[in-house]
Length: 593
Ligand SMILES: Nc1ncnc2c1ncn2[C@@H]1O[C@H](COP(=O)(O)OP(=O)(O)OP(=O)(O)O)[C@@H](O)[C@H]1O
Image 1 (cartoon, rainbow, N blue to C red):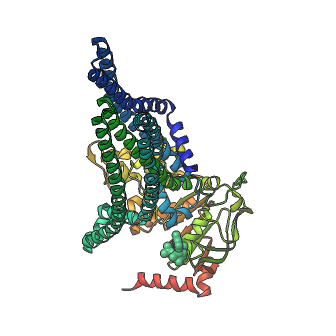
Image 2 (image 1 turned 180 degrees about the horizontal axis):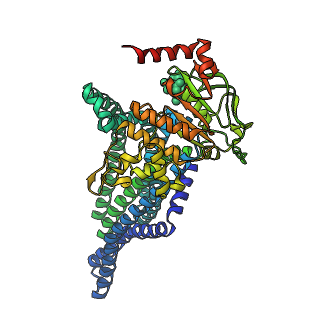
């Protein structure tokens, strides 16, 4: 019931006037069929008894014509209103869902398969279910009104037949509610299969995957996997359809038998002189009307039941607790003056995962540059995610000028940070937007965008694009009827760097592999630019190219989630440990031959 009320509230908030008009039309449409049945009986009785006058026939005919016109027009308008109400509810529901996902300020929810399944159900059914619940509720009103009208007529002719037909509603309702529960469970159950199917669909059609898929000849294999998911989901759908067909056939057959027996009885009564032709006509219409109303009523209740079960998933996303505890009145994030300290930080992505960081302690002093190095999987990117408070440490603390990051608002913290992630984004938008997204306040400021591009070495190639900074960088959208431009890996990386530079004088600059896609010349150019830019600024630089780290004030070497060594480049070489070893291997690689 909670889900039903929430759905009705949502529909009401999405458009009261239309909903009220829809309700009025439904009521009008519901009383018309019993009225037609009564009027038909009256006409037939007048004619059969020979008491009809031109005036009475004209009035009854006019009333029948008015009812017929209403019956013909009302469904068209209700259909339009139904679609319109559905669209408006869809917009509100989608907006609320995405607003709710913005409350998840960290990353954990987006890496939780169970939550992603729920999110997909919420997306799939959240927009449609409130409309369906409300329409079904109106449908119940319509069926009740029409049913009561017909039942009244039937009761006048044969009370026992009225009771008998009404009684068939009970097993019908029980069967439909049972079926709807099974149907909802089936739809929820096939959610993971559908999500996998969508994944393979996207993969097979994505420009990014197209190269590998063709080179490795994966298309047939992936198509097979996609089909497997569809087949598994279809098997469940089929089982559900068969169950419904069997149950509904039995219920439908029983109703038809009952109606047929009633008709035989009414005809025999007429032969015996106990009934008029009008009675028989009303009887036939009333039995059919009551049965149709009961079928409608039962179907609508079952729909509400099923949709409410699905809408529950939408509600559960809307009401899910935050992924990171944010205090009701979080502390402000002071401008950095002393530095950032990792104090005995332990972190794992979930209780099922291994520890990614095991008691990491180091300091990024204010105004200094710190290099973070280590083998693949050592925990470097995890450090970055914790620094941006995408997750909280499980044990230990990260202190920003002594303030625990758990006590601050992540949004305010992130406003103080500029960063280039290892897996930076490429947006299918214009070059200017790709840079401007780094700081929404500068989105329309072409001067600041150009300055950031110049600093990242992107101004040259962006200026040479067909529409300069306004060129759409996309292979999937058209730019004013023409194909967009796609950049090279290194060019995209420069744009990502420009995005970070646009954030300007932030307190902390994090660069996770900022030059991995760049050619040697560009890398040199970028790093000397970076050195100039980061001079006197606090920054954390992560790179496997140790040559670009060597000038950092402090180098922290991570190994299997622990700080293995730290010191300056010279200190670490003298220590002769992991860093010296990695550096020697790289240096040797450059000298061979
Ligand atoms: N989202 C995640 N969920 C679960 N485990 C993760 C996740 N991201 C990383 N890990 C694990 O955490 C450990 C540290 O990963 P991290 O990405 O921090 O390493 P890294 O030092 O940045 O590696 P690389 O040099 O390859 O970028 C690895 O064992 C990795 O498998």
